[in-house]
Amino acid sequence: MDYSEQEERSTISESGSSNSYDQQQPSFADEHGLMELLEGDRAYDLIYRNCKSALGDQCELLSILRNGFGNVGSRAKLKAFQVFQEAVEMKHAGEEGGGKARVKYGWCAVKKTELKSVLEYGFSQPRNDGCYGRGLYLSPDNALLECLKDSAAESEDGMRFLLLSRIILGKSEIVPLGSTQSCPSSPEFDSGVDDLASPSKYIVWSTHMNTHVLPEFLVCIKAPFNFNRSVKRLRSPWMAFPVLIKALSKFLPPTQILIIQKHYKDQQNRRISRSELIQRVRHITGDKLLVHIIKAFGHKVQH
Image 1 (cartoon, helix red, strand yellow):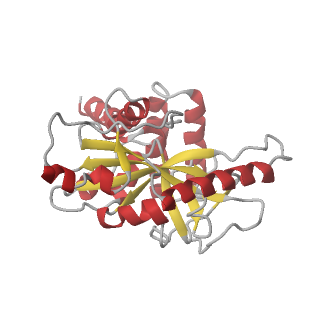
Image 2 (cartoon, helix red, strand yellow):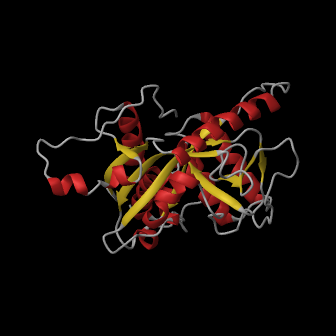
């Protein structure tokens, strides 16, 4: 999904009155070089719908802000990103279906205290649990819930800060769980994913994380303080996967059902674990649909 717009303008809300104190105290947006987006802005509406679709009423969306690229450091990062995007396009120009940098959007959680430095200077160190090597892990733009679960609340009020960034994926390679990789395995690759068909993680190596990732939007969300622990595991002991797949086929297109069947076959052949299978299915379907199907199945069993 493309959230960007050609027109670069500030949409910070204006107050009808001001005083010297307001003028002396910069807003959160001004302090971080951001522009607050308002309802009706194309990017705001797309991101808002994305967030509501993923989170429902579990969380409160407080604000959506755009990176204004107003200082020297952030403008340099924007220029560098554009240069590397062109370089990746040239690198793959001769390949079948080549000439594409495959720029996608991805989510990454940040702390409020580090937000300003990340926006101006970039990421100072890898941000991950090390399961897929050394680098920056981002969730695809349709997997906000996974990113939010990996984030930590800033305080007891449950504030979370999530960056939505443009990512140059180029040609991706599969990175197995437990990898210690810290750069592409060969010059032909530009990034890593946990699954080529339906990735739940974009892996940008530490060598690339400040040239191939461009923070463009900040979403401020208020989640329950125990949100990470309260998200239910959608693992049903009474519903076999073939039954679940059959039920899902009534709601999902055939292409997604084929992907789920492939993941299930991989799990049966012990290529992936059951927990990894569940995570991949959740990424495709979303938690809301799975909960609906499992609850409906449970009611049928009871009756």
